[in-house]
Image (tube, rainbow, N blue to C red):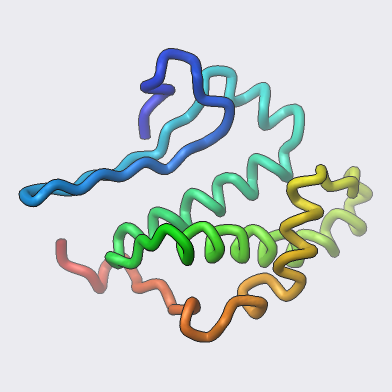
Length: 131
């Protein structure tokens, strides 16, 4: 994890990866002022963490794909939002989702279940993989 390698130009969390013939690397980048983003919209930032984790999992399992990786990441966001709904009500937390998150639920109303079968996979346990 690194703090904004782009000199203050990041506005949200980012997953970045690169591959050359001899090496590959990836990292998560936090924007400056990230805690202010969390305070302003904690649900959005929790979804952003889930989105980045999904992309990181795709990287780890060699499944990065320009089409499927973002779709899967958004479906994971939808899965989280579905899981959070009862808590938001039970704990009387503000339930208003921003336009982006409303769009996630519209596009992935069943979370991961909204993805085609060929885009779903069970992430391996870290201990099961040898790098």
